[in-house]
Image 1: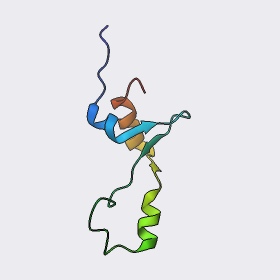
Image 2: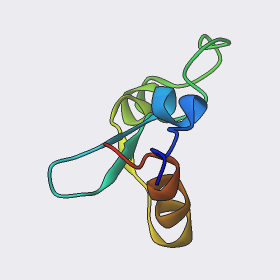
Image 3: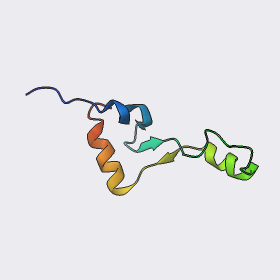
Image 4: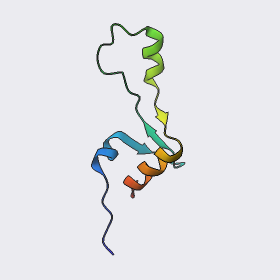
Length: 65
């Protein structure tokens, strides 16, 4: 049986943790930051984890992580 291919777009955006959770970066932190409050920008710093059906889909895209 041939090896499965990794979806490269997903590999650049998501990482699997040692416990198996899927970690991702938050959106809205790239530009137009002057109009966003300090509190909002500070809260956007932290990474988040995918849940439910989204996590299952990304898990299939990253077979070897």
